Amino acid sequence: QTRVLTGITTTGTPHLGNYVGAIRPAIAASRRPEVDAFFFMADYHALIKSDDPARIERSRLEIAATWLAAGLDPAKVTFYRQSDIPEIPELTWFLTCVTAKGLLNRAHAYKAAVDKNAEIGEDPDAGVTAGLYMYPVLMAADILAFNAQQVPVGRDQIQHIEMARDIAQRFNHIYGREFFALPEVVIEEQVATLPGLDGRKMSKSYDNTVPLFAGGAKHLREAILRIVTDSRLPGEPKDPDSASLFTLFRAFATEAESSAFRRALEEGIGWGEAKQVLFERIEADVAPMREHYEKLIAHPAAIEEILQEGARKARAVAGPKIAELRDAIGLRAMS
Ligand code: ATP
Image (tube, rainbow, N blue to C red):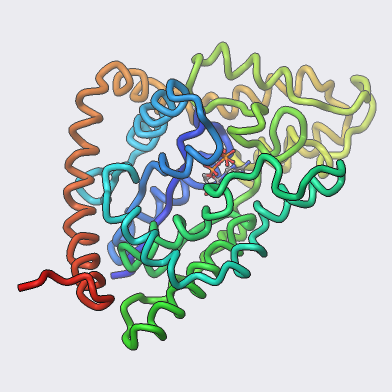
């Protein structure tokens, strides 16, 4: 079996991009018999981006309910909250002590923050927390605590997986044994990166999302109506390849449906009408899951129970790993 691990940061309400880019392919993979799936809510990671406790708490519940409504089977998948696994922060420290500071200096998220400061003539590290700086080490611990072999991610995350490999290799080298398997990045080429309302990548922390379930069909429709378009009028041909609407449509449609929508745009369907077509296509997929979601979210105690069981399963893997590492690095009991 191949251990496949993936997580979603609990920074907000799950959106169409999370579903298409992460949840839908991960659930499909988890149904393959050769896959041993570990899916988690990355709530320690959320603290890097958000200091709003209510938002994080709500997001954890919404993301858990979303995974379950989308078909995750907790009997088959190890499904847990990162913050329920104390082995993860412990491993983070072990890894921190073998990670070259220079490696972290090169991490994209940190460099982007530093470059932005430089642009506006600020101190390079202004507003940069040590949390942001350490993000790749925490992510390495998420993966290595379970010896995950494959990590499906979006392109923006490739560097972090490479760093996890570097850190694992360095640890193995220093302590002289293959403690960690080297994780492989899996890029799902056919999985689209969905644009948000403003045309940038749809992202919880940009507040430009189309929520998957929250607010019901009415809110889905309203959000779709707010997607930016160019100013071409009904009757004028539209360019599907530069239209966010078309990228979103394709993520939910069959080849035949996409071709028909492409033609309609090229033939000059108005943006308003195109948005209605998009809404109906997405709603057809989302409505049955939403019904399930609403039932789940009304019973947080049942979700909590599922997560506690998931934490137990996850710790049954991470616990022995940490014990082995403590022993190897000199933190063994004085018997
Ligand atoms: P944040 O703004 O907190 O980073 P996010 O909404 O960008 O949140 P993450 O929680 O970082 O999403 O990512 C969870 C998963 O969802 C990742 O696998 C990521 O690749 C995927 N994902 C996020 N946004 C999109 C998108 N716009 N299109 C496709 N996949 C996406």
